[in-house]
Length: 381
Image 1 (cartoon, one colour):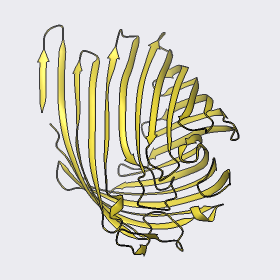
Image 2 (cartoon, rainbow, N blue to C red):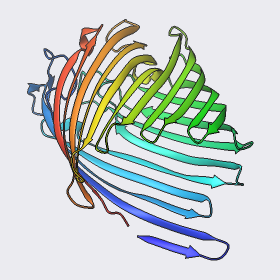
Image 3 (cartoon, one colour):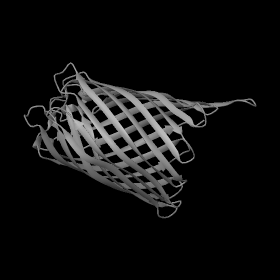
Image 4 (cartoon, helix red, strand yellow):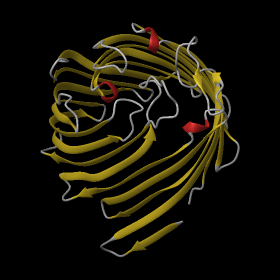
């Protein structure tokens, strides 16, 4: 659906795009646990593998007037498991906001996000599938940029996050986190953007005696186009995280390189070293690793993709059922997929993924083979 309003002084248009998805997936180790410790499904049988279906739908919408844009995205999902039916659940994600323009030099955004989802099974060592692993998060944010001249730009922003895990499936927590950032960028030409920034966040766990944390990041960024087919992006910085018992300071950053080799073939390389909050242990995670990917547009309707990821992670915090305060993990994954545009509005994507983690703590070591297929419909206006 589209609409257009126009005068000599004003211009406005909007559109709404409904979308729906049906997914089937089979996992050889659904709960990502050691192969010698299967879990009990709803019927009382101990097993590792299972299958599920995901039925999802929602809308994406926007309304533009002059140089402003209001946007809204929603998605609802219903998960049905074949054997671990106690994990059946609903998820919802919604985002709304406004991209605003005050003058040709001053622009910004204000928005909010809400997400109700099952915690990543990579982050939670499930000992009892009968417990709830549903997390809800809400983020409110505001940001602005000021173009001082044709080469220099100042930007800044603030955000506030609340997260709630209402059950004891993992260690229960409510966390509030505030964040602020400021930076300056130099736009040397159409192909180069570079700058420096400072980001500081502070969080505390409600209804808990767990220590809060502050984290400050000092970063340098660069984006550079090498011709029409090659893009280079990088961030390097230093992170200081202060949290009683789990202080971490580390050099962090990311680097990505993508190139269009031929009209049909492209590849990318990504490297990262990141320091993040790891809420399920009331601690932090320092991850170092990278991804290599290759895409081939076989025909106008068919695209083949493959990628390999290798990450090493140091997780600090309190682990359920153990007195350990940290663990080291090595996570490797390989994924291949085929994207087929069957119709203008329908895309079919079969995929396969192999993933394994070797952990310092045996309870977190696993291997998993996954195969599945997505049917996605997007009804463009």
